[in-house]
Length: 227
Image 1 (tube, helix red, strand yellow):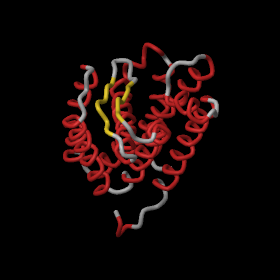
Image 2 (cartoon, helix red, strand yellow; image 1 turned 90 degrees about the vertical axis):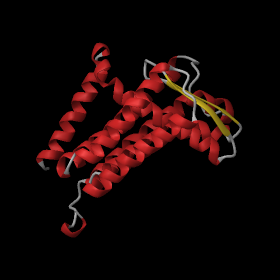
Image 3 (cartoon, helix red, strand yellow; image 1 turned 180 degrees about the vertical axis):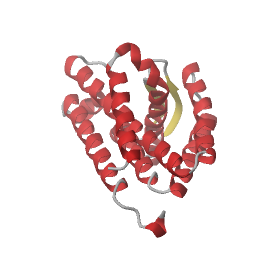
Image 4 (cartoon, one colour; image 1 turned 60 degrees about the horizontal axis):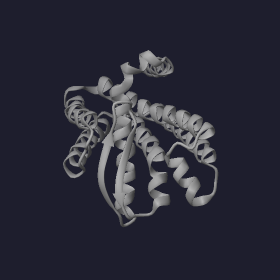
């Protein structure tokens, strides 16, 4: 394992530790906001793909979010958030293998976030501010960071997105196991009669498997000609 890989794992472990301490969670809230933006965007995109119309996205101060939409497949829309974020995180990890692909994906995410800010009304001030700040942050990182630093930053962001998705799922498992609080899993339970806890556990396992798979592939040797 290289020094960069060890550093990535260390940073990931530290972020998990921060997440586990209630007071310390504020230190990683910006990452949670970014995760929530793309979680809700996954709902919005699936709404469009299934014939519906997303109305607005809201991201709240505690890191939670909601997407209001009309039409579309309720089943597919409710299913899109957590797996969508985990898949995006894995794409970031894989893109971080090479400098050019890392730069492209960070620029792409910046553009997507900017377009969503224009097209989808965010009624919550925290969601508005966090999107405004993350748009230039992603672009500047893509332009200013070089070589190993750019690759590390891209993979770190990817791991964090997978981890924050995984952390959100752990909370979701706790919520759905002890209450009837409205969640994506609760929505699917109402549609399919499959317990919300089953959906939560399934999404958690999916997130865990995909981050392990992407790290394994990202850390395999890259041919010199492809670097």
